[in-house]
Image 1 (cartoon, rainbow over the protein chains, first blue to last red):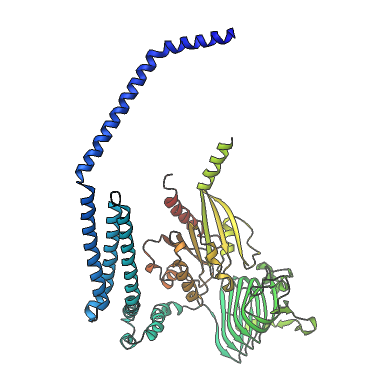
Image 2: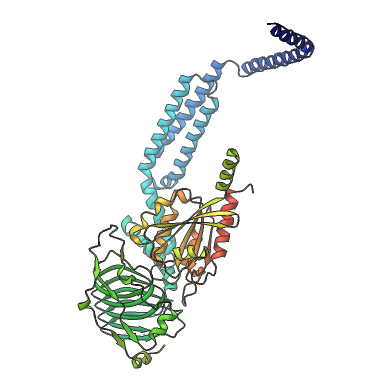
Length: 369
Length: 185
């Protein structure tokens, strides 16, 4: 009890001793607050007088708004009814202009929204969205033709130096669309002249080539029918495209082999990577460091590499392909992403495999490059 | 301790970049990534799906998404577009026949709105092969000069096999992304 009292007394004493300072502080604070309040009041009064009465500025806003709205509507109607070709050409910029005016109108509303009654804000926003919708309609009605004209123009530009058939094609959009990619071709052709070395467009031929040991070149086999191809020595990359009823024997390839569109063929390949696309009824005898893949293929069968020519072992070693990894049978089918075996490929039964294929050294030298 | 570790984490996040590697199959995307990371490139199977590699590069951390290029899985590329800072388009410079395909796929990719802000590095790969097209020729075929002016892009010749040109390309890409994102540094 006594202790309590003494405590409260000391507290009283301390309060009193602090009083003059806190009082001063409080007074200063109050003064500042009242100053602030005064200035705020003054500001608000001046703002009210400045803007004249809110009713009048609402009215002036509405006047401006409805005037702008009417002019946009008139312009829209005019665009819709345009028929002569000259103003049709201007249509696109006209429509763009319109969309800008609508955006300006929207800005006007948002700038004045702080004093407008909520009803006016809502109704003006509704009419803006109506305008936007009408513009959208006009765009979709008139722009398909615009798009066509634009494409047509671009095609003409490209064709200036090539052919002048664009004029005849202008009457229907389909023919112009087909021509458009062609116009890019002339430019491309002068690069495609520099085709990589290869055997192309041959029928019923035996094609033999030996490569020096540098192994830096690539080689292409394309558009062959009923041919036998023997490539010995080391290569950097091989491309195979559109082969039918061919037998193809290739020495080690340091990089990758890309195969597309082959049918009723036999391939004997050694490479680091092998990709097979659109193959049908074809047997592959592979030595490959990684997993070979098939895509969009059917009835393809796989067996281990079975080639022999003088110096093959060294070539294999130099290309990092000595020793079979067994990956010739680990095929990934990109069209069959399931755990069960893909129906598109299978292991070639041993009794159906060809025996070791020998390429005599006389042959490999005959067409030395 | 708790706050510090959060700040550290945010700091670390800030220095991260997301790099998307795309291109036709057989162009050498995976080999490039492994080569940059100093890994063995002798046994690489065609990519079924995708690989992610996190690589420290300069003071940045690159999250490299290497997405398979086989035709069947190209339609899944779009799943990786979000928040990509740098786009790497890899071209097999020796595959002349499919350059047309290559151009078409690139054009489609660049139409993608989610990639509109990404810096574009085009790697003309396999320059070590005799008869490979030069970066200039590739640029001409792909019509790169007609690209949208707002796009930051560069084409660099390289060979994932020898490693030549890779650092030049990635230096540019990382600097370009950094100058856009970490402007305060």
